[in-house]
Image 1 (cartoon, rainbow, N blue to C red):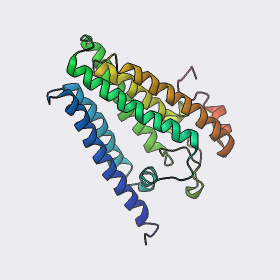
Image 2 (spheres, rainbow, N blue to C red; image 1 turned 180 degrees about the vertical axis):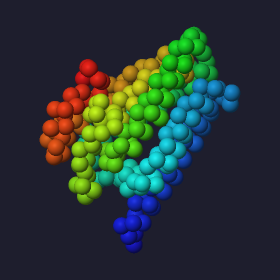
Image 3 (cartoon, one colour; image 1 turned 30 degrees about the vertical axis):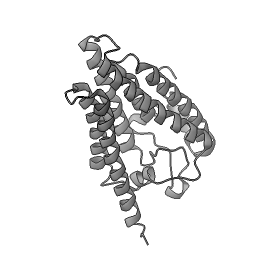
Image 4 (cartoon, one colour; image 1 turned 30 degrees about the horizontal axis):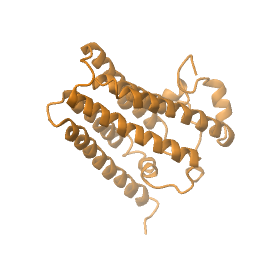
Length: 234
């Protein structure tokens, strides 16, 4: 039987194993479809995910393994709308990367200016390896599903990036999915990328409504931090 101390560590190891296989799957998917190993931006995208995993292992695992354990274990009390939106996100992400890889192989999109590709790369890095990691390091209750973690004593987080917007992790993920099509030179991949951003905006609205109703102190926090995703906008 796991003790309270060993259970989070075991769960965090399960998370680490899942992330390792996920990164290997991404590399196999991208380069298996494109049919060559010398795809620089394909390696850049793989590197973004690997850096995210390493950052979580370096900055979160030593001091908050319980959060990574929560991200790795199933939650039977997940809300139906959250399950549907997560499923849509997973499917759209797969379509985005498959389309981008096919585009790189068959050249459907004319070459974009190097500056446009580098801007897409910068947006993806800033969003996923910057803003998302910052949000996860700041928020000990940052898990993959929408649930109030009463068993962990969840409280409102208002420091770090949460001073700027109420859902910085989602903003970081949106930057990734909007940046990837440009860094991979695929306007076709922009279609699922934009749809992914739309799904995340819907999820933000529904999650924010639930937090207003269920998490003590969130109403006051929302009054101080006015914007959900976009500073000065929404």
